[in-house]
Length: 433
Image (cartoon, rainbow, N blue to C red; front, side, top):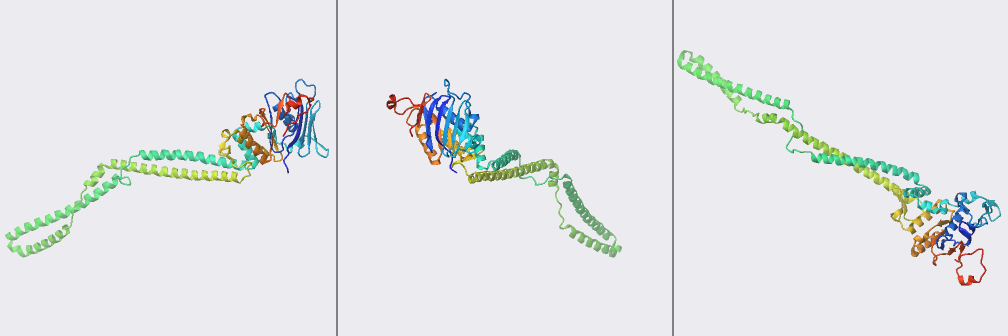
């Protein structure tokens, strides 16, 4: 369906307007120029009242000093004629067939923000973003992703802080590379000492046995010299003793006593050793905790990136009103800039494009105070409107050539003062396009 635009409007006795007739260009920019307090804004207010309904009715609609009630007459490109006239300025909508209609018929194609674009432009960045997301149908999905990203970000922030603390704590812990890996048990050392002492005692018993046999042999030999008659018996005993000595000596040849000095040192230093072991264990635990939290942090970072990519994919797949228009962190972004960094021309482009997207049937917007734009920017914006097939009726404090018409004291100023000097004064004055 072709978007609805304004073909012609006639205004009389509304606010500062005395009598004005305008035929706006179908696509592009129609600038209503003039000095301050001449009736420029009254033109936009009249259109808003005629098409938007009673909520746009001025508090004092009738021109001061006039006894004639306000009259509004607008012809739309779909053939509808919109009128407000008479004492109560009642609305009358007539279609090409002569059928009557009312505000409900106008509401089908008149976008409210098109009549009150400053309302959108003055809203917060987040409100603008929400409006855009609503019209492209991804607001709810993006809200879920935003909430997921926020929760993961907060969790990652907490995990990161804990990981930093653990890493700092681990670095501050002393470490003793020469300490054993496990705590030393005093009872185990004492048990080992007792086993060695018992083994050494057994060795000593065997040495004493050797000494005993040696002494026995000595005394027996003395006895042999004195007791020849017992020689045979004593020689037998001697041989037995020698044999026993030989066996005993064989048993003691490989015996070697072990020192308990190391164990005694370990027992005396056990507290210091265990202190070092505990310190090493604490450091190892701190480093392990830090690694675990850092792994959690990295995993959350990956999840956040996935969520952000999902948001980007969602917006890229959506049918946005303008190329390079998007939403990031709840803010409207155009050409990489947030609203407060956009140029005046870009702000108007974004606003007009969003209004059109809100209601594609509405093919026009009303813009006030375009004096903020220089001529080059104004021309660029006008060309963009023509390319997009949008109609904009705007005001500008200026009497320059960029103005489509100039309002002066409630009338459209005649572009040729000399020719009008002798001509009779006209009730309605039209602009030249």
